[in-house]
Image 1 (cartoon, rainbow over the protein chains, first blue to last red):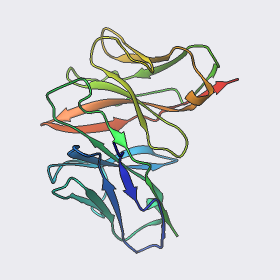
Image 2 (cartoon, one colour):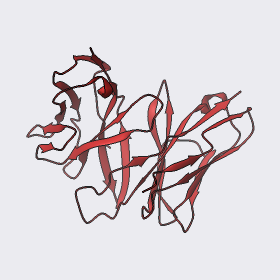
Image 3 (cartoon, helix red, strand yellow):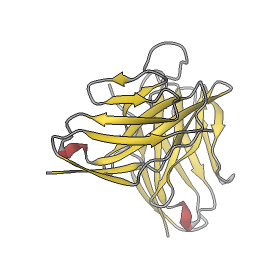
Length: 118
Length: 112
């Protein structure tokens, strides 16, 4: 089956602009989480969406936001971009049914969207 | 939220077992330990997870100490393709939500 798809793969923006990244989860997966990866900070949790509701949020400013649609696809938005927002943004999907199976909670990651802010 | 501590880097000879340690001394009773790895320029890949008991699958074995404060990922016969950054993660469940806290990762280099 198709994996997690993230678009765009690469993009360049300038300071002050805003950006929207898209993530299509694996079919049947209802949980989508977002991570920011930078060389200095490693992988940091941004937020998780399940059934169109944000379930948890990491320690990022309000410029970082997201949403999930009824088909489980998710978008994240970063407004007023800063140089420090340059990073690889990773999306992961999971079943997150919470009941059955040893695989519950396993994350499947996409290849990421690499954002460069100039 | 429990946090993890891992060595920054390790080397392992090809064909030998790679033992990657992880400390999670503040882990609570309902938190799972997950291991992922990330090969350069790719998204992280799931390896294995466990709660209390040791676990084994086709990729690796996970040994969790009895007090659950630390664990070790074992790659029994490391190959060059196992060169990657390995992340030890404690999966926190708070009010039914699932939040993964990644550690700094161990950069494993398998040497020919």
